[in-house]
Length: 296
Image (cartoon, rainbow, N blue to C red; front, side, top):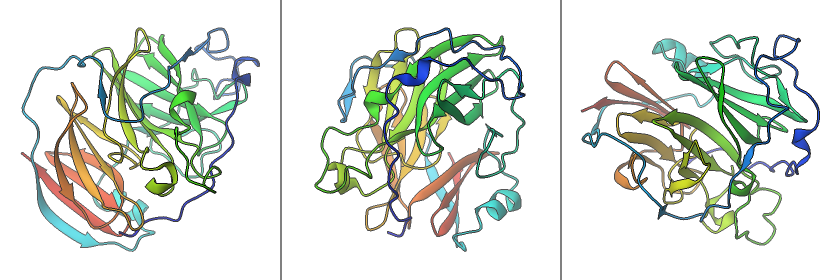
């Protein structure tokens, strides 16, 4: 399958992030104090499908995706795809971002945490997910902020970002990043992985994980190679995600939100980039093909 070329990963940031004070996005002092708080350092994950205990859910039926449209795209026309279909992601504009986002960043959000910049801000309505890293390819820390501007969790995902096995000559490419994060019912669902071939880390890449917000403990980790798209969709008691890369199989996956187990998968023609739910349909942008699915 077609996909982007691999890119060298940034070097790990070490543990120096907790030193300098915060700067708010608007230039003044931040209402959210991260500098006075130590992030919870997460234990290394298994880098493989694991269930410690189920996440709380309501037990609803899994969504069924039925393809209703498929069209080749121009590869570089992602912005036009969003506009043409009236779509957007719940991302906010962060300082120095390489692309424009639809939403304005609240002035109370810290633009930095130590020597790590705010690289992604996601507005889920009842909470913000703030991702910090040394570059836009290296999100490491995740802060969850509720509607009352309270930091309900601050997590360090460093242990998730270096795979336990690395193929010869691939060490410069396999440093991972946190891709997307959303909280629901006291659990953080998060994607993580690197941006090169699966073989570079002997297949240990592109996971979804569920983390207990109160303790930082892992509830489950998915099978590998299920989520390297820019985002995933939380729908009811399930997660919809996608994985693909050059010369690798490309699929959309539906996961059980309680256990992380794959309940269904659909083949697609190239690596998925964006998934957006709108009016009962799932719009999927892949490297060279656009899809629309009915959600049933």
